[in-house]
Image (cartoon, rainbow, N blue to C red):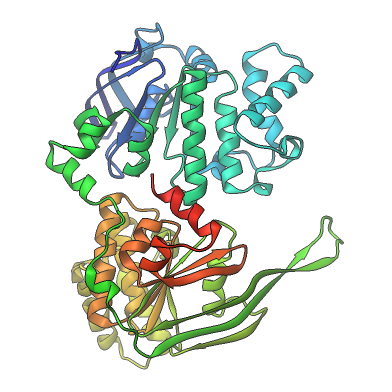
Length: 522
């Protein structure tokens, strides 16, 4: 492979947080080289130092008073990048370095139009007229594959889909045709088909504009598809680096081997396909769900929108059924209706569970931060049983053990736990009433690949031990293939295909299902 001319060189970068007693070093001896037009992947678990290293490269650490950084960063002819003044860094970030982030909804200003935000950098760094800025912004929106540019230019962030918002972020980042694009988890919150589209867009930008890309992700499939070089971080240090094929197919370090082995693939245990269903614990027949939407204006009339159409499926005792589809397809609406949250529906829902439980995508957001884990676990018992305090405490301790946590966690608060530990608590909460089935809504999508593998293993183990049925909602088709017995494919509020996982994945009938699977098979 031809050696590319060096664009970015990072040598012995150290980053720490100032503390009253002793400074905490969180990144140690970080070294990285990126050539012009090169794609480099930066991978590692949460807390490994990936994003902090990227912020240092973008010159954004100076704004943080409690952060200290030393080392050498050379970028595009600037040999002492860390010592540049803020106004010089601002100019570089506006023109030569672009950044896109994981969640475009929080990165975009909700009270500004898309056009205003895409043009912002042009207002700061150029003398272009209003008409010229508008023309450049429209061109940038077209370049990222947005067709209805007039509408999108005048729209606000909440009026766009997740994929459209991420394309807008890329358009804004590419408005000056930067030499380096830093993409920090840009596809993590997106559906598999939108992920594939964004990845293809980044590849096209790399090839057409010769823009170098630092791609930060915990999704090793995406990194392998996009990047020629990979850097693996653990606990603030680089543990392995090299060609993507070498790192993924012949990893040297134990930690890299662990990461690679945790990647969900299209493999299944043989016994899962041979399972025979037991009695039905959930039956949904002809479900239609409606929402009332007020037209524009304070006194606008309400209109009724149908979001689910004639949805029918069943789940048997001890069965795991996957529900997949893109954002807006109605997956979470089905879950909310089964939980009794949506009342405006017709059809028949019959289930053997009086108090169905749910495991959510964000464990931190679904646990009360002001209450201890013990209090949280006991709450369903207080509401739905006549157990005394001693019995409740005993049951809370027992269920924690079942999910792999000790009784010492009963006195801790959610903020004192890691993401994986919090999700284990959420699973314990869903199981404490011994339900016949529960719903897992994107229960592993926000977790690192190794934590994701641990939670999936836990769900399998609990499922085999307790024979609990699960409705597993996910956009990750690899995870669904590994875990589920059957799968439901949802598109625009309708189930267009359903059946055994093996059958649907190997011989899909619907074009939409084929497209989903094609997007997942990189």
